[in-house]
Amino acid sequence: MMHDNEMREPLFDFLEVYFKKIRIIEEKVIMKSRADVLGVIDGAIVGFEIKSDSDTYQRLETQIPDYDKYCDYSYLVIGKSHLKHAEEHIPPHWGMICIHDADNIEMCREAGLSPKVKLVNQLSFLWRNELAELLAMNHLPKCTGKNKKEISKLLIEKVDNDLLREQLTECLFERDYNIFEEKNQQLKEKGVETSYRKTKTGVKAKRRVKRPPKPVGVKHVISGSARKRRVKKRGDI
Image (cartoon, rainbow, N blue to C red; front, side, top):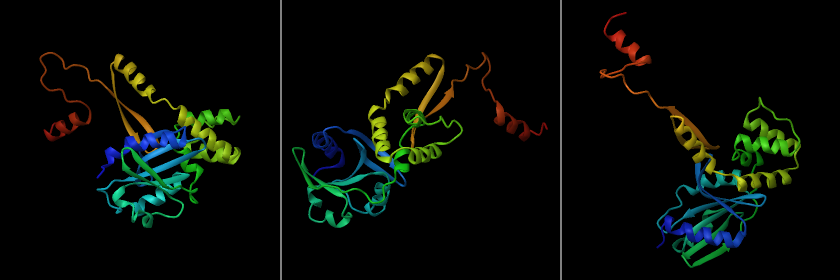
């Protein structure tokens, strides 16, 4: 019996051989689901939902529509105990991969193109600066006052969609997550404490300026709204 965490590394090794060029993104939120694995390949995004030997199909019915809207191709990745009945739980265009053990992985069925995938959804994976790069690459105006969705719609209208898919996946291939660590270090040196949280569209920075030390001899310092509440309670105003 294989568990989820035991299936991932063998799966990644298999995908690198099968697709030749692929970038793996784990645990990405799409709609109301969390995709176990997204694979970026040339001109397409591929989703992989893992069901280990200890998993059930309880959430799969709601996960499938979300994968279909964001992924060109989707695969159900299963442990061998699911091999007999897994096909009954996925639509015809979904593929299936079975991990019998770490050294034995079988491509049971190749995936077909999702009939519901939308390029505007896939463009939401890009950061704003990456969308700006696509505008410049295609000789379009900067669209400073527009939000990400408006920029995405403009790109879809003005750029050949097959070319745009290639440019989108190339951006995801080239993305450098190390910039967050470098920026964090620079801010720490300036006395700014920074933490990052994942969102549906990427990673956003949340900054907190370090508080200055309390004055010597003062045990409690109350400021802002907390101070106003304390004063009102005492009946001073």
